[in-house]
Length: 344
Ligand code: SF4
Image (cartoon, rainbow, N blue to C red; front, side, top):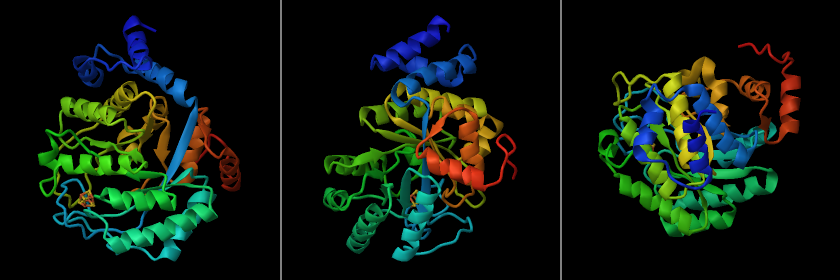
């Protein structure tokens, strides 16, 4: 490998942050070629995660009706996107989702709420649900509850919650372009509340909302500074009716560079290729597993992902190892698909 790529690996593994200008070059410079970049990112990934891939399933346990005005979100008060709006699902349905996730070979079950924050009543409901999931299934549990204070974070932690998700989404500078009903610091405050209660924190970004490469670099540095252990990297999906519209072109090449950058700056983190994988990476999806060690399988919020069998087959075909492999083998066997011939 050329010296320049070797230096990315060395700096990352030595815990040094790469120079900002270099980070921007990783995203946009044609002097930095994609394949050696992916090889370099894989060396860092391999050190901490080997060839393992963790598969996550999302359950949107409440949808729509949010009072915030995030321009990229179909649940925002200003969105015209037609979505299936519903209040918090009944406990029975949420537990059923956990059962299906467990039987689908998911490692983690993520329950996502729309809205600014959770009422005390909702937190109490969640406490009971988390306790039941942890008792019934061998699943890690993550909740995305919106803004939260330390007291509620502690209640969830005590119930058995493993991880709390609250995305930064973009840089502090660009934040006013994607939302004006709350600010970047509000998001950082929730992350700090979760952290101080002892919860693991998951926080990531959405690339492709009109921001510049420097905003992506800023967000990656901020997540590094906050020592975030789980980073979902989403790629914006311009669905009809969103307030955020315009021509924000993401190419597979750029998306892969974003993932590599996040790996170099956050070498030990679980980097997840999240929403937009199918739309923006298209035939190059498999390559995302070289920098990323985790992905979402189905259950995207208000959009549709690949089906589970295709996703699992893709991981196995590329020679990666899925967490809870035994059940995955059963799923692939039962699907009556010949490896290498997965159909729609
Ligand atoms: S706070 Fe969350 S659910 Fe509400 S509009 Fe923003 S991203 Fe969407």
